[in-house]
Image (cartoon, rainbow, N blue to C red):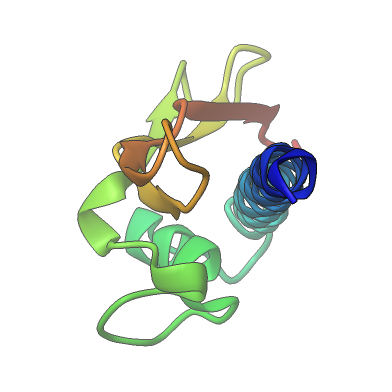
Length: 129
């Protein structure tokens, strides 16, 4: 019976660790996808006849549309997203930069359980000219 208890504890820690790793990877990749999509939207929108604002691009990250309020996708807080336009508009160095930093996630694995802050995400795409 003792062997089963020790084995079950190790198995559950391994199982929770796999779950936490998978969820953390999924969360990070979801945010990377949202940042890339929003940066692409901004790079095309800022070059077209109908222009958008950095707030529209930020909303694309948070809500996958240009309007919205409250927390974004997967509980992403609006203050965690920044959108800037770097370079000279109309020149080759004109870029849209989307950064996501300070988002948190919760882990359940014993020894690692609790709230953690994710790594910053930075996406930079040139504006279409």
